[in-house]
Length: 166
Image (cartoon, rainbow, N blue to C red):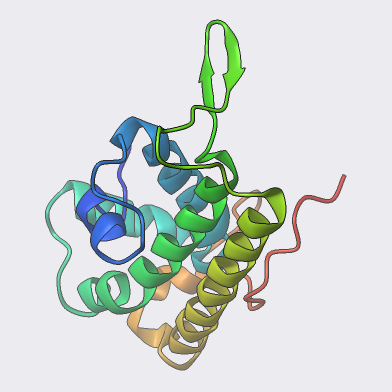
């Protein structure tokens, strides 16, 4: 299946402090990654794939449209931004990793970036809790939510992401 995103670049620019002149190539990867990691973890594999199929087939309507518009998108926007922020000030190119500085600006400190990431993650977790609650109370509207099996990702009922455990 082709890459199907649950938000557009316009969504993330209009609903976050991310400036409209930020190159899409700089943050679209973080949207896809946040969708794969955070959203799939909340929805479970079957519902996640069902939404991708409906979006790619232009058949997203009714309860599924409400799920995406009112619950999934706010979570995804905030997680994508929080994942992007630590990388926003660097450029990675053939010559290495650079910190470009504009004439009339200075780079934000690590503690300032960490603060912004945490604030954005707090918002993401708030919206994630709303999404989880909505799915818990309305799971009969989304049969795929309870159809996971074997190596599928089962829906998480926890709105906090604790990082990777090895």
